[in-house]
Image 1 (spheres, helix red, strand yellow):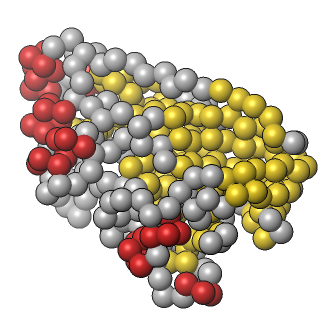
Image 2 (cartoon, protein in one colour):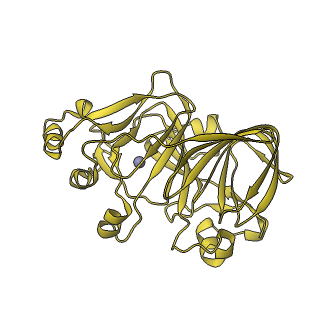
Length: 310
Ligand code: ZN
């Protein structure tokens, strides 16, 4: 079926969240501590309902089960990807995610988590944390013991438009002042390594030091995804990453382009501008799923899009 599924995002309040999901995207956020917009999600912790009248009352998760043909009859219990916009007013915890094998064995058969970040905006001088400086597990344990967090972590300066792939086992943290579009495996398994000794409702959030040590890659190996770019009509398309779980591309268009989608599904997020997809209006902040083997599509307008597929 040639359908564009239009998402109603789900918002999540976080101790490190802010209000930029409202000031930048005009979303109806619940408070000034809103950290995450789950823009395209079938995850039970935040399953998006749909604007399409023909699917009233359904969610991405329920459609995945009732209408697998919309998603190319892919195997699996859940819609496999999760697209978020993250507004980090304050620092996120320093964390690490397991791979599928470790999560499957230790987290009730859950998927592991590979994720990637496209920096939508950031304050001047903002950094992120990617990797660490320990050469051996013993050295890391010693640095944790002595609370030498700032010596242990690797900080990288960032700018608007930067892109980072975060594989399982890569220690990482988004720092305050960053607005990011995240594409990830649909998983919620996070091992919190250090949380700046912050309190949430009067208590520190739990840490998972042992699991973090189990899964963290030591020493850290830097990852630079292979990128490529091409033109399509008036559009420039850049492939930001292609890994085992997803391919993520950025499209900038001023005019017309003609795509031919032959994927089980494609996630589309409109980062700026307005235009049409096969005559249907889209504008900044819209998130859609293009259903299975959609085929040719005319895209028009002045648009910046991130799209992803498995
Ligand atoms: Zn993470």
